[in-house]
Image (cartoon, rainbow, N blue to C red; front, side, top):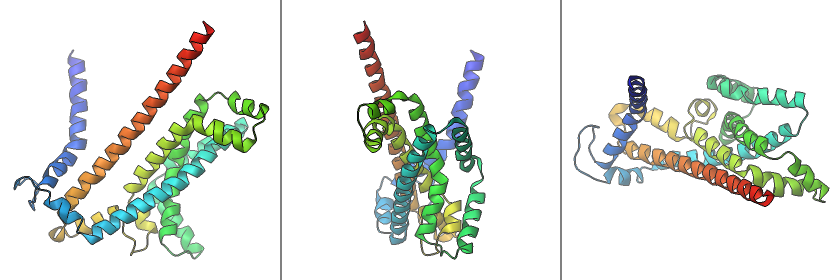
Length: 273
């Protein structure tokens, strides 16, 4: 009993440390007070000011454009890579699976610095393209690892059976393999987008000074607290709500897929009986 209470208390303390500052910002985003901790009454004034702040809206637009673009590219490349590795020979598959984990365990500053040096060496000006490449390098491994378990759960004979029934390789890939691993693909896309949304290190190294994202915009404002725009509390709330929405959607898709597979297995057993 004591151990259970201590374990629950430990978890509660950790959750408070992680989420309490966020909840405080959320609560005080609904008041027009200039100081967090002073409540001037319920108000949407900060949200109104946020959508009147051209710098913040530009940074938000750039962030969303970069996140969606890099997530799409990472999802396509990561999915194709996972499928190719899955159907490869054992030695090559193990080598590629090990290589795919390097971007995850490697320090992000190493990735950012190496890409910055590479772009300078080949005379590529920093801009949206360099940012796109950097974010794809950061997120593609996470897409690969999201798709890989779905491929392992799939019946390995399904693809070959489709070929035996007369399907072309492209048709079997798009109509047999892709639908089976679609939840993993969507999870990888969502994960890639969330990683891109809050990236700061790679963005700082590879961006043009005129291309501002939310992370670089907020950091620049934090350096001068006397001119810090209080409507960023509202921006924090919206970003957090967006992250929660992605999490809920991802869990819904995972639950729906698990339910579908359970029903299919149940029907198969009923037929056998």
